[in-house]
Amino acid sequence: MKIPVRVAANPYDVVVARGARHDIPALITQRAPRARQVVVLVDEAISSQPWFDIEGVIIPINGGESSKSLAYVEQVANDLSRTGVTRQDILVAVGGGATTDFVGLLGALYQRGMPVINVPTTVAGMSDAAIGGKTGVNIAAGKNLLGTFTQPAGVICDLDTLSTLPPRDAVAGEAEMVKCWLISQRPTSDYLTADFETRLEHAISLKAQIVAADEREGSTRALLNYGHTLAHAIEAQFFDGDDAPRHGEAVAVGLVFADMLAASLGRCDVSRVASTREVLRQLGLPVSLPAQLDLEETVSFMRRDKKAHGGLTFVLTGDHGCEVVAGIDDALVRGCLDTFMEESR
Image (cartoon, rainbow, N blue to C red; front, side, top):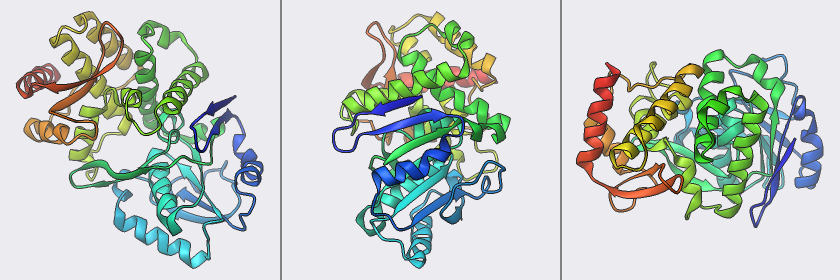
């Protein structure tokens, strides 16, 4: 399966297949014909997996959210410098969404920019993070607040890499695919009967279509943040802790809350909340707020969300599908959070 991402300046394909990693040399020849070195930045947690046979200068890196910092960008950039890599060479990012976010930013900054091929090895990475050119690292104020829009040279989704994915990560990744299903206004019951590759193809195709129309999130691309306003606030409080939720787990909770908020605003019926909650529950995803969540801090983080302009801003469903809704009253949001927390106990 090959899905084109038709961005204006640097169109590329997302290739999805078993064994697709073996297409990397041909892609490098096509997209970086002057490259003398291929530097493979691989999440050290997966570098020993039996399927990992990607050739190049191998640099294992920390792949988790806690490593997404400017200090670590500098550390790995120094590692690149020691290899003698130049801007004509190419980086290959192998790992989950945190890895492709990190390597994407590193590639955008090193010698003012060098090409990157993303090889996502998680469901969330394949369906969302590795596609679309968003790169970033975290700061204390929030997740991905430092980053760029820099498109990859290509995305290789090798389904064989999912064979060694921990079950929790596999389930968590489904949240991004459910998000896309809901944005498309498809019945949630159909999601559970569709096979995995159908769900993945739908998610990638929707993201490719939206990114091509709005590469830098000036309008419709913001719809892909459905469920993420609360999700990022949850992650901002926990991404350095041992009890940190997976990104998809936080998104699942955020999807439920977004529908609760939409129902409170009269944008949808409460049955929408119930159906969203049920499909996520059947997949094994969380549908409740973390008990230790600080609600005041949560609202504060949501005010600093990247898409917030003029007050609290959420992507919410409605009669015309999902829309960005700005200027939502703090008291209403806090009231929904209080209700959600009571339901979660």
